[in-house]
Length: 162
Image (cartoon, rainbow, N blue to C red):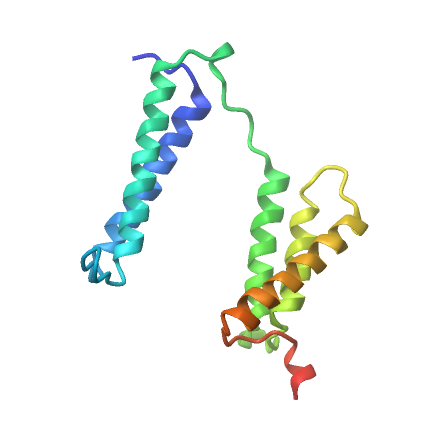
């Protein structure tokens, strides 16, 4: 069989493998039924849906002709590194890192750092636009998670709240 779109083929394989991993991991929990869902129900259904979506994309890559075979390009290392670094920084700032005695800096500081680091992956990065975006995200996250959902986690740095 001839692959007609490399990008779709490998994307479909990735979706199928991640979906299968989620579905398999969810079987370790009680799944329950549609009326009485257990903790494994949502990850199982999400994994199955992702695997089916991956199968459809993979099938399409083998059937539908694309111009030039839609070749896979080289790795975009800069965005990959900045996005991973941004997420790791957010996690460390949100909860702190006791092993190096870094206190929890809270959600607001974490969102600003996350947004600034992730935005550096973009060509033509502008500080003003990133500051506006991070402010909107911080306010929206505060309203959604703290005010509406009433989740309990550090919002401000610990030295502000003491």
